[in-house]
Length: 182
Image (tube, rainbow, N blue to C red; front, side, top):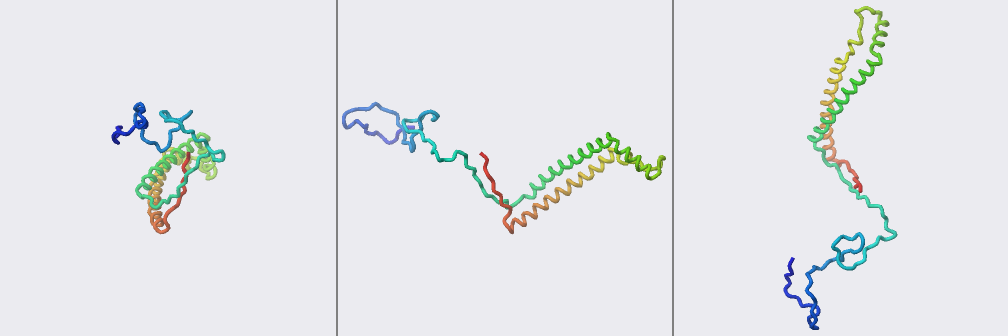
C-alpha cells in the first residue's frame, strides 16, 4: 500500500532534527494485544484484557423461535415413500426371521399335530399346517402386506402435508424453538 497523502512534515523538522524514515502504518482502532497467546505480528504495548471475576464462563446458548409455515407435499411424498420402503423391508426380514425361529423350535409340527388330533384326521386327508404356512407362502403374504403398506403410508403422508398446509394457513403453523449447540 502506498501513502497517497503527499509529503508530510517530520515530527522533528521544525527543530532541525531528522528522524529516520519509517514505513507507513495506518491508524488502528484498537491496539493489537501483546504477550503470551497474542497473535503474531502484534503491535506495540497495550495490556491484554483479563476476564472479570464475576463473569460467567459458560458459553451462552442462542435460541431462535421459528415457525413451520408450509410443508412441501412433493418432498413429504418422497421422504415418506423411502421410509415406508425401509419399513416394508424390515417387515419382510422380521417375518422370515420369525418363521425360521418358529420352524427351528418345532412350533408348526406341534400345532399341526394338535390340529390333526382335534379334528380326528390323522390320515392324509386332513389339514396340513406345515404346508399351509410354508416359507414361500409366508414371504408372498408378507410382501403383499408390505407393498400395500408402502402405498398407503405414502398416500397418507402426502395427504397429511396438504391438510397441514391448509390448517397452517389459518393458524400460522407449528412454532419451534431451536437452540444452537456450542
